[in-house]
Length: 242
Image 1 (tube, helix red, strand yellow):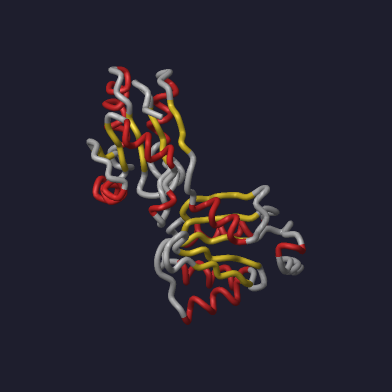
Image 2: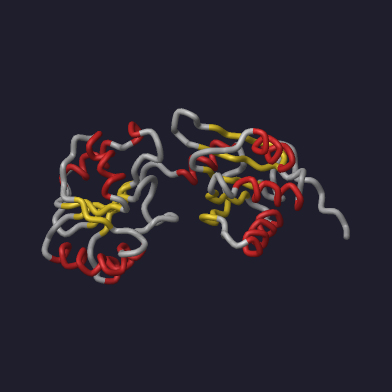
């Protein structure tokens, strides 16, 4: 299907395995007038793999406000635009939401092409219940804010999922180990890539593993909720009375 004039297409892209691109995404990228992307060099690798040559314009967190006005003008002039982030669905802990909001307010057509998502992949692959969950994006860098976020996750009924960096993961796991050593958690790492890993166990067990085997790559951290059913694994340890 060819791109329609004056339409913005928000397109999910592979989170690791380039073969996960959808047919619709490939066809749309090949037919739009221009492609906006978070990083032109990174997206260039995907487009080269797909044998697609289109004008690339960067749109990231530092220039999204400035670029949005120009893209609205392009859309009003009838150009079709695709937006892709570095990986996964744009707007989910990535740029894109501001551009979509501006198009909605200007009554310009927007189509979202679903596809790969690290959040949903990790959620389903963890074996934790996915009928209700909380996604908190990247954990806060500041220690106090991080501890408050993790404490809230440990007190929630549903599963909580966060993005985390490899160099901060040991500190985060150590904090979880101190707060609730028996809570069932999962580290989902390098999803869809050659060294994909799901490491599931108590906070004590998972923290000990990554002390001995430092993690690399892109990481999702999942924390089971208080309402974890028996079929999903060992239930969270009861809260101690203090």
